[in-house]
Image (tube, rainbow, N blue to C red; front, side, top):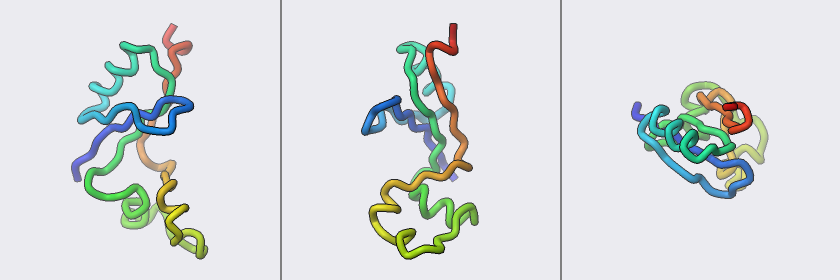
Length: 89
């Protein structure tokens, strides 16, 4: 399955970059000394459907089927990294 790396800056409402590789993303993050989270997403499928398909999440409550839940869904098992320029020295 193809994948992309998505960077979400701390405090941002929207994604600030989508990259074909982790290396590309980290070059962007390092160049601008950004704070935020970089997450690997499968391409062509939602995080919600992917987590169900991978048996990482099982909807068990009525709200798990509601749009509000699905549109905010993320799964902690997705490969992800946190960045803070203060940690870089």
